[in-house]
Structures are given as structure tokens and as C-alpha cells.
Amino acid sequence: MTTAVGLAILAQNTTGPEFGKASPIGLVIIVLLLIGTALLVRSMNGHFKKLPASFEPTDPTPDQAVDDGTDRGGIGPDPRG
Image (cartoon, rainbow, N blue to C red; front, side, top):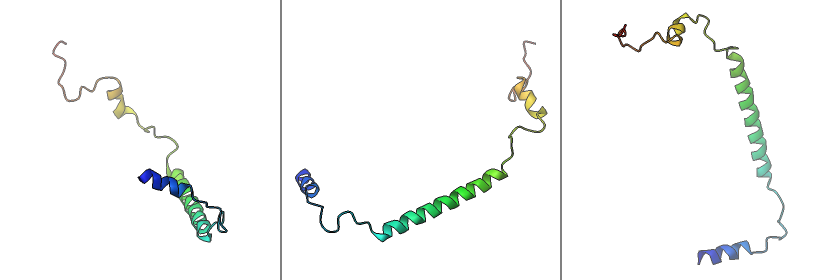
């Protein structure tokens, strides 16, 4: 029953005198969205400029122990020698 109602709504003639005319509110909404997007892009660029050029540590010695495999995660020395 609902499909018949849906088909009847879709089958209506929509080419009346107001067909194809856009509302001025639509233009206002699009302009507001464009302004909001421009402000967001400007804000993101400001945040990106504050980021460092690289995230590499300046002193890698604390990380070298982990990288070399010497950090055993709190486990004592290897009993096998």
C-alpha cells in the first residue's frame, strides 16, 4: 500500500509555474557554507604553521635503548647468560 502512495507522489506533474525556481534562502545557505569553509581552511593553515617541521627527537639517546633491544620491559637479566 505504501509503495502505491509513493508511486503516486512520484508520478505527479511537477512542471507547474514554480518549477525550477530556486529560493533565495538556498543562496544564503550556500554563501554561509562557503564562508564557514573558508574560515575553517584559514584556521587549519594557522594550526599547520605552528607544527614543527619534523617530529624527530632532538636527542635520540633515550630511544636508542629501546631501538637496540636492550629494554626488556621490566624483566630482569637473562638467566641463560
